Length: 125
Image 1 (cartoon, rainbow, N blue to C red):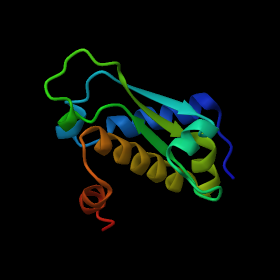
Image 2 (image 1 turned 30 degrees about the horizontal axis):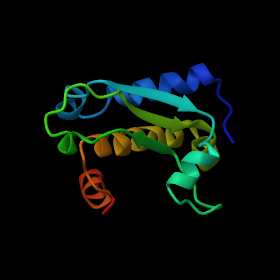
Image 3 (image 1 turned 90 degrees about the horizontal axis):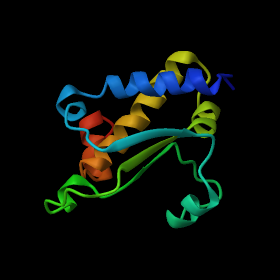
Image 4 (image 1 turned 120 degrees about the vertical axis):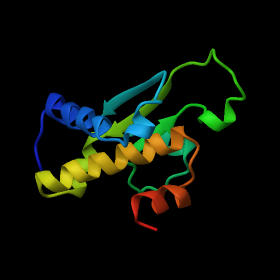
């Protein structure tokens, strides 16, 4: 497993955010990107994850299409989970790709895209 400091990992997440396609990146508003070591038991329960299921990232908020013009909402939150990602890769290029894929996936949820559409857009469908 690769070893990175929290700061190094956060820099990779920031870099991934910077590489989101401009069309999407330019319209991100009122959203916080966080890095946590692992999902909490509550997050896992809320998502009905099996004990062996891995969670790399999580979008929490109200997707744009569901806001119905509401302006005063709490910030949306995207959390990237460091340990599951680090356990899933063996090289730095794999790590960067997994972080980017995870960030993009969660940003797509912010825009209200479902998993089918996300996979179509990222070429994994």
